[in-house]
Length: 228
Ligand SMILES: NC(=O)c1ccc[n+]([C@@H]2O[C@H](COP(=O)([O-])OP(=O)(O)OC[C@H]3O[C@@H](n4cnc5c(N)ncnc54)[C@H](OP(=O)(O)O)[C@@H]3O)[C@@H](O)[C@H]2O)c1
Image 1 (cartoon, rainbow, N blue to C red):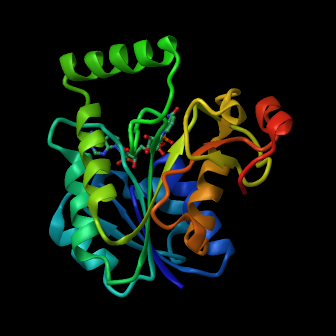
Image 2: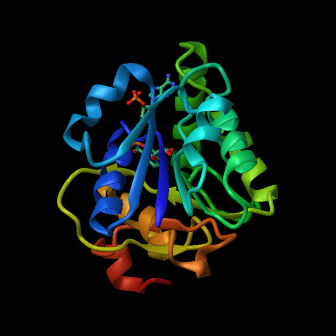
């Protein structure tokens, strides 16, 4: 299996590279030119394509011949980074490739998720601050996911809870709806977010799903059992 990781130099991206290599996959990583050094530990073991993730030429070259594309959808920057990245991946990934995208619980596919007032307040405040300080556009990540949900590619959008560092606890459990008591702990190890993304490449049950995930060892997961 040959996979492309878009956003390879970030924390999630680097975990995904290692896990893809552990599975014996051939890996192509896309990251900004100034971040190539962050991937020094992988030099010689992966192909690195320097460039912006929303540069359509870069993405077209990077995803050529790939069986799967793992895309870190980040709302950073004011140049429609998320929607540009998602659109390029949707347009240029080979037909039939598994496309796995990361985002957070704030993304809703069908409006049937239930959010606490505190969560909605946090998203409003963070989104507003990012916009005012010209750091990022949460709305653009929403637009990116709208396009993914509308596409007829073999997509999965993995919606992460709050993240923490630490050793792997195993594959997160998931629900179709934020608000499910299973997710109440709202905590996932970042390494396990990556594990879920990479495992989704070979899990056809997740095609056209937007799983909201939580750590499998969290109290709410242990109390309620999971869908995976
Ligand atoms: N952090 C959380 O608590 C949390 C919670 C739920 C879901 N998520 C989801 O997890 C994913 C990544 O989360 P993470 O916190 O682990 O981040 P991360 O892996 O550190 O990734 C950050 C990525 O964003 C890129 N980036 C940063 N600023 C940028 C800019 N101005 N323009 C373009 N690219 C930029 C970085 O590239 P460089 O290496 O070049 O800087 C890197 O690839 C996202 O999909 C996010 O929605 C995060």
